[in-house]
Figure 1: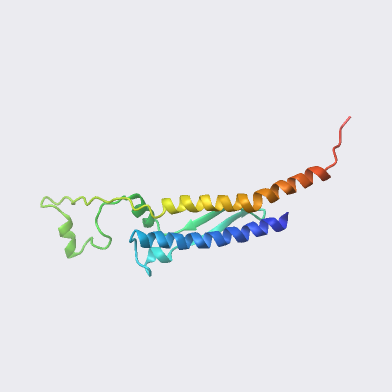
Figure 2: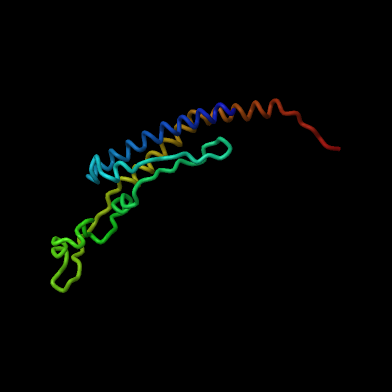
Length: 147
């Protein structure tokens, strides 16, 4: 049974690598960042384990990628503050023009879809094996009654 958990770790590692590729594809689809940009390069993952069992997969990337996904922010491009271009983002009274940002769901849609795929893989490949292991444990266990 311990060998089975090592197999699950390999499957989850492979899945996580594919998910990072899917995130990159979604960013490309929604025209977010550049192929050599900081957000693109910032994707990493690690497995959280407890007692040799995989408990969670943690994906890490720059936080501003989530802001684009949710469509939040002031609407002023990064790097324009303090430049001569900054004045074009202000009205005559000094107030910022509010450029409407719209959500670009590159992260939330991809994450939800990929979690469903992992769940399916684990149920199909390991659900039946786990039931068989439990049945074998129950069949070999001696029942002891206390009197």
